[in-house]
Amino acid sequence: RSLLMGQDCSCEDSSKQDEKFVPAVSSEDQVMPEGAITQAQDVSKFAPRSGAPAVASGAPKANRERTQEKPRVFEFVIKKLGPDDKLGMDVKHVHHRLEVVHVFPDGAIERTNQTNRAKSPMGETLNLGDVIEKVNNVENSDHQMVAECRLRDELVFIVSRSNAPTGVTQ
Image (cartoon, rainbow, N blue to C red; front, side):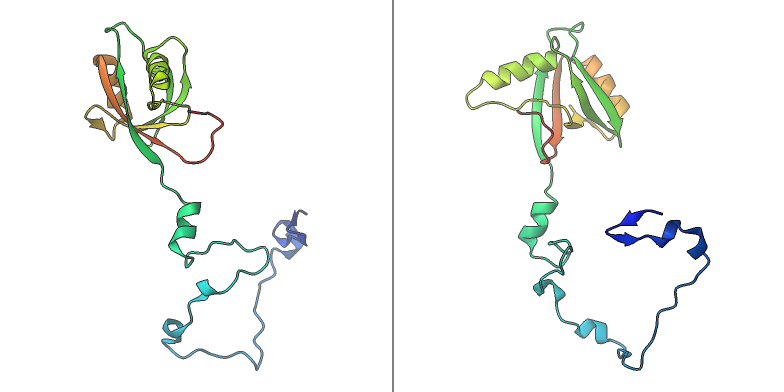
């Protein structure tokens, strides 16, 4: 038996699995006329009950945006020194995109990061957790994006970065 929010959870109790839940109907229950649901009040104006999430789907737009911010998208340009110059990163293939999982200290990515950090104002850097959406004109194919990285000396990445803190600073 496990505890869930201070209540005994019956879903793991095999003795209660065969019991069927039948809601009690009292004489005080009312049947709503057809179409009444469209006449209901906007419930987003009411305060949530204790312990309920503060932001509901009917909440003001500003509150929803705070909880579901879109990732920031930017361009990251890399110039390799030649065909033998390594990019110096490991990626994970996720939904036809490339997620950066490691940046090595001696590759074109880190060299570009250092150059961009030295600029005033600071330029964009490629960080762990960033998602490469597009390489030059190649998108929607993670394997073709990797091939493009190997073939070209000048690469333009379109990168999206989650606004959630990752522990990596820019």
